Amino acid sequence: MKKILFAICISVSAFSFAQDYSVPAASPRQVVEQQFSMSKITVDYGRPGVKGRKIFGELVPYGQVWRAGANSSTKITFGQSVNFGGKVVPAGTYGLFIVPTEKEWKVILNKDFQQWGAYTYDPKQDVVDVTVPVNKLADKQEWFEITLNPTDENTANLVLKWDFAQAEVPLKPSKLDAVIKISDKLKEIKKIESDAAKTKS
Image (cartoon, rainbow, N blue to C red; front, side):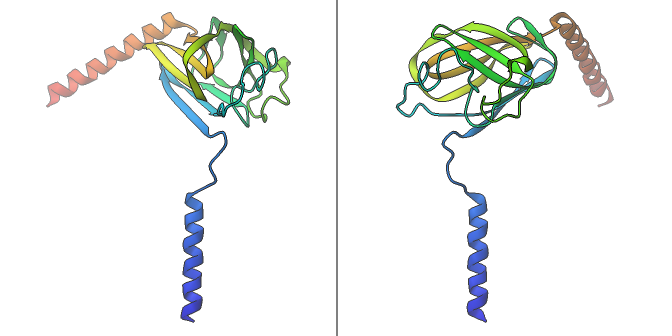
């Protein structure tokens, strides 16, 4: 009986151990979340590595749509309406795709954000596309990376880097003047609340 109980305990321990660990992903998934203006932006994407391969122009062919990552398509969610590289995009979730060339990338937001890769990509579902220049990095970026770099309270750059290439899409609220006015009013309210709290104490 003791042997049976011991075996059960070992099995349960092994099962618990297995739940905590998994086989390392070839292209690990990452979720990036950044406070932006009065809301936030979230990017969910797979991070492929260079691994000694020629990337742009070979693994990622020039002139063809690419999923901007690995595995399931990259998803970007805007908590408010934004100006995406000069074009207005409503709040919501979109698939992020890229059509690269040697000197510039077309960055696309598509309504279908639940597809695998870009195999069922339909240009008719595109919401906007913007073309941005590609800059050459001094040092190699081994793992594909998407970051959101704030430039001030209400603007940021969507930065895409891999191998020796980097591109940026500027972001700002679609109605910046209105956002600034609302933000100023909210700051006034917070100051009133803070002053009232000090008076009570």
